[in-house]
Image 1: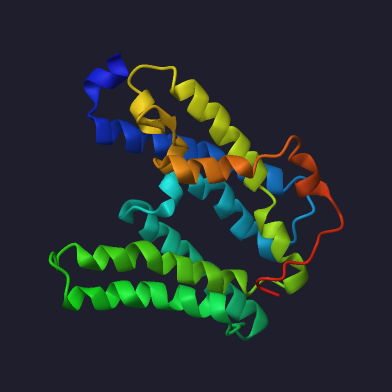
Image 2: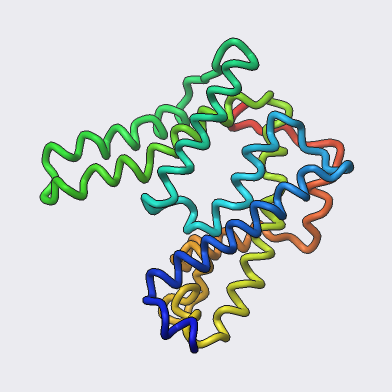
Length: 216
């Protein structure tokens, strides 16, 4: 009750989401640096991001999209410095992802609210950066980028269930009495929960991975 009284709804959400992201950042780092964790060094940074980002509304809002974009630019610059080049593949998926932020940027010309239109570009540009960063990981190691997703999905299900029972926190994870999780959208939250198998451990520690066909 004191937490609800002292802070407004937005401040409570930002404070709680920020605290959870901070804890998950430490937890993700510890998991990835376990001696038995079969995640290559090049993939660790993106795997860590995939573990933390869902708890920041998936990085959709500007307060999350901007630091995520900076983080991805750092990763891409590091990959360029390490490899001496950047890898990019032209296919239907990469073209579609490239066109998405460009379309948002062009919408400023005819948008009814020209002040808000640029935020569409801000929200979607990190997606293009993420794809470019993912392509810098060796093809045989790209599956390992998603190694922590089951752990994060399981944690989100548990936290969302508990928060849904606490007055003052219910609105952060429930939309029209549907479990939305930290994405604040029930359908996206449901898709995230699909990532949670009965046992996430084999995904993190298995030695043999099926090669991804989308980005190979």
